[in-house]
Length: 167
Ligand code: SF4
Ligand code: SF4
Image (cartoon, rainbow, N blue to C red):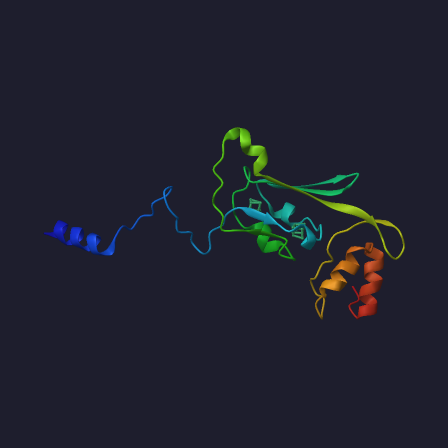
C-alpha cells in the first residue's frame, strides 16, 4: 500500500533527480565553484595568497611585473581568498564544470600579470595595480582608479592627502 502511494506520488510529481549529463543540472545559489580573477581590480596586496592554506595562489616578482598564478587542481574551494580580497578582484563563481583529464591540468590555472609602469608624476618604476579602496571616502571614481593606477606609492599618498584622505 505504502509502495503504491509513493509510486503514484512520484508519477504525479515527476523525478527528483536531474538528468545529468543529458540535460541541465540544478546549481545551488551559493555554489563555490571555479575561481575568477579580475586583473583590473587587483591591488597586488597578496592577501589572497596569504590566506590560501593549500597554496593554490601564488605571486611572483618578474622583470615584467607581478605575476599572479592560481591552480584549480590545488584549490579546496574554501572561499577565503574572496572573503579577504578588498576589491572583489577574486571570487568564486557557481561554475562547477571542472572535470578534466590529468594532462589538461595546466589549463586549469589562471595566469595574469600586473605590469610595471612609470609613475605619471615622478617617473619612478611602479606596479600598475589598482589603488586600495579600503577607508577611502568618498569612494574612488573609475577615473580616479585609472589615475592612481599610474602613480607610485609615494605619489598616491600625496594624491590621497590632496583629496582629503591622508594615510
Ligand atoms: S578558494 Fe580557498 S583554496 Fe581556493 S584559491 Fe581561494 S583561498 Fe585558496
Ligand atoms: S586585491 Fe584581491 S586578488 Fe588582488 S592580491 Fe589583493 S586579495 Fe589578491
